[in-house]
Length: 358
Image 1 (spheres, rainbow, N blue to C red):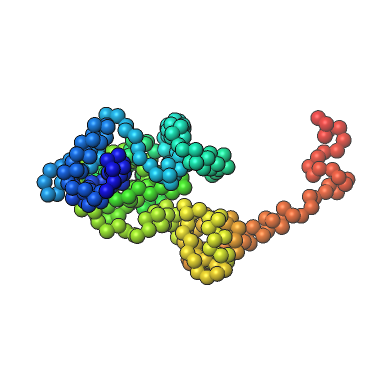
Image 2 (image 1 turned 90 degrees about the vertical axis):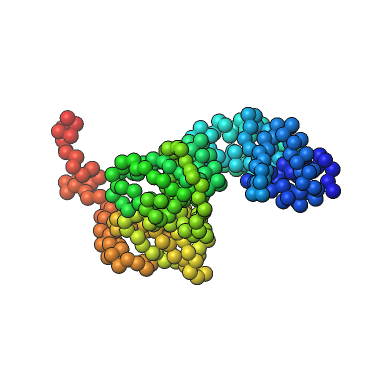
């Protein structure tokens, strides 16, 4: 049996790792009686940890929010993960988190053991985040936290959603006018891509799964009631969201065979640009979308890989047309500049005599 101090730390770790525990489950994990669990919970409360208890057969213990932030219990890997995550959090589009991350990281590194401080220091010193392209609209941390709590507690969410004023087919099923709409959903999970946060939820009005950009969500409480979680639309929600933002959200879709191994293609094509599927040792399939077939032509030609169009046939014809235009343009650009008939080396269009100096 663990001594009292070690048992308290173990109890705190269990409460932090799970939303709610029954007294019997905690007693079994700790190898003590339910009465000892109650005494240990009282000790944690004296130390400033707000442990809530609900009576009855379905009740249990839950670590709640208090007036002050008590110390967190982290193992070695968790501490390193938090420290590195704080450093890179500013690159994920969360409004105002950069300064807060620096302050939190300074506090964490102050109490890290030497062995962990060296690991974190090495990662900080030799890691440079690469932020590509324009940065997305920032997400309010309070909104992100509110959505996470509703997903965890399985409570309905009411919010106002701002659609973009565009004509393409949206995976969110919103109107293309850009006008805000009111939504009531059963939130399931938050998914973070390389540049944005998305909420995967069951839309009660549309009776279907929808993906919403979090930076366009404005919660409109009160929320609730609680619901029984549904079977998610896919086992791999990250891949599901990637298909939505790279393919389903666009009017034109295509399947392209890239004549390179999957690993090589994945190093250049981001998940937000399309979904890659292994096909063989020397090829892979790319499922992607664009606003029009003409834009799709540019998209596939700029990837820098040899490719074959699997579908649609319209894309093949558009590439043939673009190839002819591009070939003629490049041929003209490669020709030597025309020289004036009455003198070599003179810039075309330059007048001779004194008129050129006027």
